[in-house]
Amino acid sequence: MSRFWSQVVRDLTPYVPGEQPKLAKLIKLNTNENPFPPSPKVLAAIQAELGEDAARLRLYPDPNADLLKTAIAKTHGVTTPQIFLGNGSDEVLAHIFMALLKHEQPILFPDITYSFYPVYCGLYGVAYQTIPLAEDFRITTADYCIRPNGGIIFPNPNAPTGCLLPLVAVEQILQANPDSVVVVDEAYVDFGGESAIKLVDRYDNLLVVHTLSKSRSLAGLRVGFAVGHPALIEALERVKNSFNSYPLDRLAIVGAVAAMEDEAHFTQCCQAVIATREALTAALQSQSFEVLPSAANFIFTRHPKFDAAELAKSLREKSIIVRHFKLPRIDQFLRITVGTAAECKALTDALREIIG
Image 1 (cartoon, helix red, strand yellow):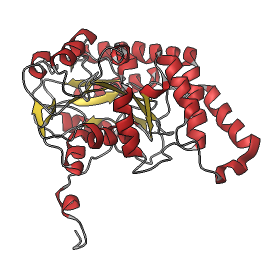
Image 2 (image 1 turned 120 degrees about the horizontal axis):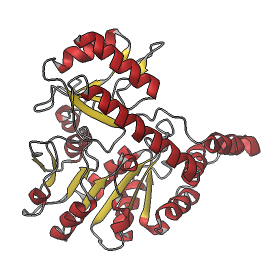
Image 3 (image 1 turned 30 degrees about the horizontal axis):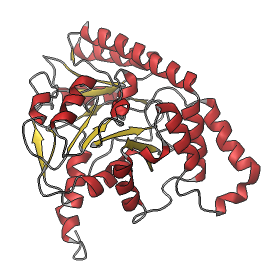
Image 4 (image 1 turned 120 degrees about the vertical axis):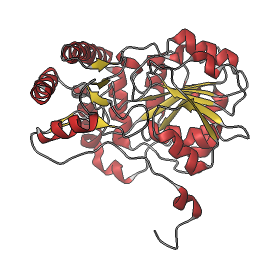
């Protein structure tokens, strides 16, 4: 701590990202990266951008990234004024907290959820109230329909549980909160959910956040976006242009466009992840693990007889990294990213050795 720190910095408890160990022959199942490479068209687009005139890198990119907005609009059946872009969905979320969720009343989100939400609240001085998940770790729709609030945000599927809230339940929350912004964080929706983007034309209080890090295999490129009513998007643009007018670089723009346009590759990868997730779930259940129903590219699991922290430690000794959260209610769970079929087999084989 330094005497030069502001009070905001002194009070912050920063978000802790998943570990990125630099070890050889590591099976890395802790940060929900897609096990499959992005579309080959992404690399071709980036190479073309560099090959045509690399000197263009001395010039700023398009601050509006209109090419990418057009590609997203075409994919999701919306218009470009309904789209906001950011350097990963975390930056999009940061701007949402500043632009749309800072009001007199506290915002609502689940008690077990994406741990960046309370960090943003601390950073921007946003009051919040956490709503407990049900005993089965699902969001209870009614809990968000009976109280005044300054806004609502939740991941769907939720993280780190992977549990999905049906679209009809999302719509019930929207209908019950016409005077509050409802933010649906859909980082993992492509692995088994139905996107709320189809509702944005009917609800001016809905904002849906997506990322290209998961289902489009572009975690290293850092591209996220939000879709909602143009008035909500305008608020985000005002904050963005007061913070960083050029959030996406030239290579990210062309690469993301190529990823959005290759629907066949996207569909194939999502189906492969879903199939591997179901096989992994069955394999763990055969070893007496409890696995929550997941619509994401990860599973949330615990064993009735073995401590989760010890299991994570034992797996690490076998060069397999999974995520363990030392938090109330979930400290006996492991979050395991769905890897390739070979990686998942190595995981279950290792667990079989560990638990006997």
